[in-house]
Length: 381
Image 1 (cartoon, rainbow, N blue to C red):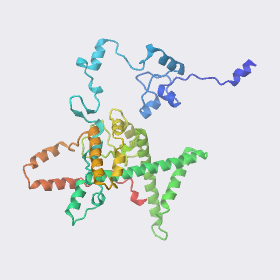
Image 2 (spheres, rainbow, N blue to C red):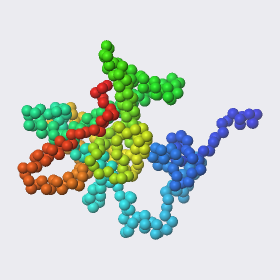
Image 3 (cartoon, one colour):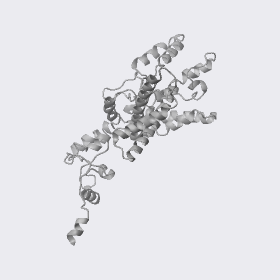
Image 4 (cartoon, rainbow, N blue to C red):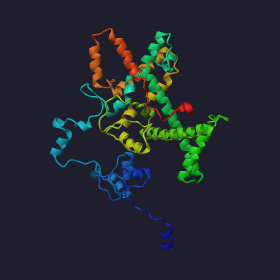
């Protein structure tokens, strides 16, 4: 009887896992790994903080025994190592210096600040008027043309923000259709095909032109564009969910800034799937500071979205100043895209007649925004 009773009681298996995998109730592989030299596969893939593999009992004892607290942190074995870690006179080492305003009043920009150059340079004071968000200014109104040029960065950033947030929503709808197909019992490939066909059907219903001689070719192009749109939409959706806030869609590298050799170009829209698989872990590398920076900027996207339809002048002024303050506190002020730009400005200071033309020509050069070129065209949907 006892043997039969024991047979019905499930045996508790004591798996060795890191703290993160045990908390998330996920597999933790490989089992025999060397800590801290090697992370588990899951923590390495998703850039989680890892820890030594141990059973639930061992983890419980490590929390209960005060002598083992802090056992996950490597402790120097002698005073020399402590001094080397802290630096001379107990000062923190360079690896411990965090971006932002320092005690001496200086400001250290996050490494990823170059990705937010447009956000730092954007001026929201005049943004929101009809001229500032239209495709072209009124040529008969000098004020209209000034506002259009003055708000170039804000206008381009706002358009990119709107399109990327729309892409995130498309990715969410696709994911819902995919999960719905999974719940029906379909396997993963068929579920993806079901979700794609469903979205193509819904989007394409309003774009068909019966009787057109080029209808088949147009539909083929439409299907390819929608497939490409879904692919990029899922990339932005995953990036927003991984970072945790939508401010990551504000990255906009125009190709003119200085990027260090170990920093990837955040060309999320047009890279191939293989290049994207290589790019994503680079963007999520803690050393880049993209996630930390986006979390500090949390709320800026909401302010920009509310700005366009805000009518009260006092509220518009307050919101523009608040956006500027938040961006400056996190990223600092904008820097020239290259070193020669500062030299050109200094040389032009002595020539009053050439300055207006130089400024207008430089703004005209900024008119080639190709962050979404060749990838997603929502005007076709």
